[in-house]
Length: 563
Image 1 (tube, helix red, strand yellow):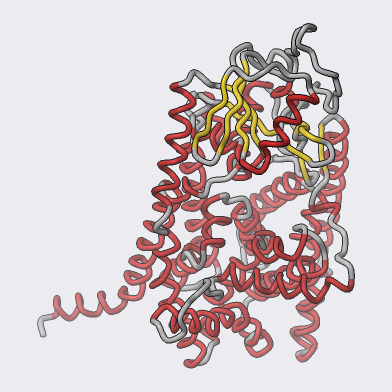
Image 2 (cartoon, one colour):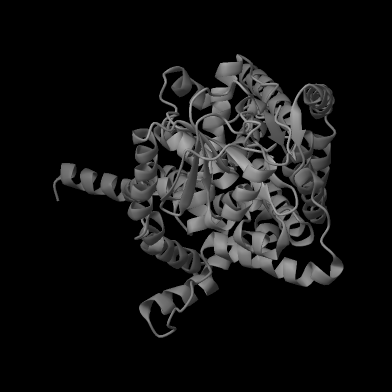
């Protein structure tokens, strides 16, 4: 064989795993981009729209923390996706594309960041690329919705990777003092921003898993006196103590600033006030939390699936195999402990402590009300699920051939079925209905209205801000009331609009709407029409302020006071 052909063959063989990993990454990137820009328009919800809405409020108020905005869960949106949407607001293009581009931008950054982090751990190029692949697969509709649709907790995952990257650069193996100084500064800035956003959430997502991981590091190191002494010396070194003292000072300052800011802002309760579930409900609630986990990773099957069909066989295979992806790294921690670097140990233990902590909180508290909510939305756990997926890549070299086979088959199945989640049959019809609704409202000259929370912000963003639909709530006891939850007082003021105002009402709230017309002494609607599932009540002026004339007035009974 000629030397040049032999060289080419050797080069191809050497780079084949890397090229294969790039091919898989290209496939998953295509899928998530299709989902973000196309499919998710059908499932886009008001929570996902909040970044667009808040960015607009920030620009209009000329304040990073608008005083008229209602924050929830004590979360101050400091370093979050609304920052990336603000330029779109300034350009007058604050629509769905702004949301989609922002999410895609963050997703690509995440994949590149994972690659750089894994390369810093001395993993091969192929393994580092696979780190991006394993978190980009559409394992389930919920996985896609939370991480590449709403994309709220993707940021937490990126911050966790960032902390691990910084710890890597602060480790003794880094000789460059300049690099360590940069890492120290980056660490303190990130620490300040995340604590400022929400100290309690920071404690749950970062502090508790970190100290839990440190405790486990000491525990696993006990078998080797040399390793144990080394671990203790590193933890008690002057450098680590100085960094810890400085970090405590930064966290204290950020916490004080957080609560000082809250005093001048509106905020509602939420996850921070979640109570423990009653003991008699605990078994059911815990079971639903586990079902939610199964649903999130794609291990659950749908209704009426025939066991003997291909779908049934694949569903059973996913049910059996996919959970192994979450436990295989944990089974190898003790065996591989002394062969891993200190950063790898910290990463793996941090991932599992956080995963266990959030699963316990989901099982024992009402983070989401009622068992069905824990079953259908386990998003708070998603950053740690992504971390565990990366653990499989980091620890791959320690797995037996059988374990590698299980993971490979699981990956193949996940890739094989992902398109049905990326592009379900019904998405195009739903998108057409949403676009048609917005166009019909514009054609009727209707540009401002109210609807329940889950039906409001969606269409505001879909219309590029041409039709503002603001949230209200219908309550059986209190009637119609304002929404003080991810909303702005500005929307309910008298001078909000001087044109027609409509109420977009779902069928089960129509009686409540008629009751509100009586209770608020509203004038009769100019028109009433049905469009899709909604009934529209159109008024000449905002009926929250313009009342019936004295000749027409009913007995007044005010339940709500608009600001």
